[in-house]
Picture: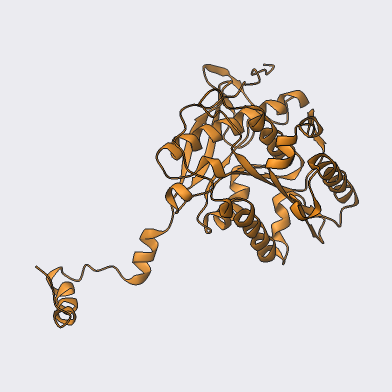
Length: 314
């Protein structure tokens, strides 16, 4: 049974009456379609219980998954604005509390341990790569539900620690070559760093710059607080090292640098009045270097990574 065009106005009038006025307004309908945000529980390979906020994407299997990594002393709540700005573009965003920060202070099966970043030794921060790996494993599950495309994985690092961890994890990801028909890694396609440095704690970015796949298959976007002499100097060293290692033609440049006149560090740079322009450029970068590449969605059967063993003094 079909309605003619003449019957539509009458039907439109009758619906509120027949159903007691239970009709959503346009604003209510829009609200019902807004992407969700939820808290999720993850477990790293070395047993740390990780709390994270998951901002659902809106593009199904074309959705770009983004992992946002905070800096030392930070927590996921500080990155809510950045996460929502990325989510607004349709991306799926996962923001964890790194071990020893926020709500990620417990170890599975070890109730006697409570992690505290202020008491962690420098070498223990390097194990936070396992926290990022737990986030990727979460996204692989979501990928297999056809809600993201893991082949489009992006990392965003805030501050020295978040940036060098993100860069280092990207390097680790590309070291895992396909195993027969199984793809284990090589999913990270872009890394965005707010206030990047070559080294933080015992984590060094330089160790991954000898691998051409890391340098030539990944695109990098650096947001630099250039009113800070040390931050600008560190970023320049990082940029120069990236350019030397990438060995690509000028018109294929994979490293973009955006200088912002502020002394603020990490994602706090987004507190400046130019924040909308910074976010516009970040989103344009993701579209150009990731979305427009049209990476084919595939179901992922396995992932590979060797965890750094958990170690914490009582």
